[in-house]
Amino acid sequence: MTTTESDGPMTTEATPQVATVGPRTLAWQRRRHSAVRFWRQYRTHRAGVFGLAALSLFALIALTAPLTVGSDVQSVTGAPGGPMESPSARFPLGTDQFGRNLLGLVVWGARVSLLVGLLAAVLSVAIGALIGITAGHFRGWYATVIMRITDWFLVMPTLVLAIALMTVMSRSIGTIILAIGVTTWPTTARLVRAQTLAVESRPYIERAKALGGGHWHIMSRHVLPNVMPLVLAQTTLIISSAILAEATLAFLGLGDPTVVSWGGLLQDAREAGAVSAGKWWYLVPPGVAIAVVALAFTLCGRAVESVLNPKLGVTR
Image 1: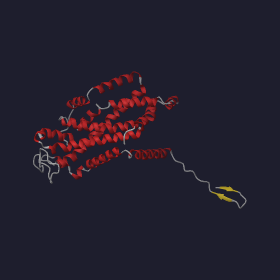
Image 2: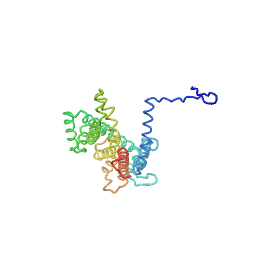
Image 3: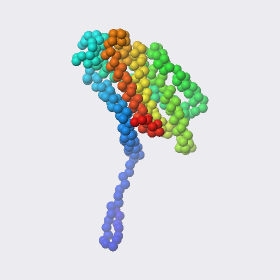
Image 4: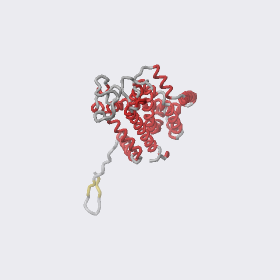
């Protein structure tokens, strides 16, 4: 309380109390404001909003598949229909070669395809980011060797490397994720290394080194936050490629035969002779699902890239 004296009687005024905000609270406030600002810019991209809506729908379908179609839809024994029945009121998308409901199989296959795409993309981006940051930070002989290895992976066909890994390892979901992840990281490594070199040329990096900042401190506290927008945009773009790669491997018969995926459905349709027999309903639903999800992830990735780097000038 403070006392003031004027021409009239003495009065007392309350001193305003300034609320102290801790560093953790301040950090969360900044992150929340950044997220709000990001969403405001993202929703101005109509294509990105369409892609996000499509992905949300597919994610909801995949998460609720055990409740909507049940896990018994994969069972070959006791199939409700005949082999490759045409679409009808009972089976809106027809049946497969075993008489199973194709609508239920497509819904259940979304779980595997989306899971493989997400995990393979995360693995690929993690490897690429680690190699790119370390190669951009340490330079010297380490950067020369690691980037020559990256160049070798770049010139080698990704599908051929993935097929080679799948043929020598057991056929499982984990093997597919590993095969896709360890063969698609070079592009991310190249992009992250270029961004790391740009970040480390800034003055505050020199000040951090002068103040005794070690390699780990500089890479984790200064370089990584600055390359994360690029990593995030690259992840959304790689997911679509990973889903297509999983479908390709499954179509070639290298997928897990015990699970249902969109690529596996296409492989079953090929083996059943659906192409020559004109059974289009066996091929179109999983093919359209793969195309729509890949397109949706690509649209989201382009929108995210445009928001994080406005200089690109991506058409909205």
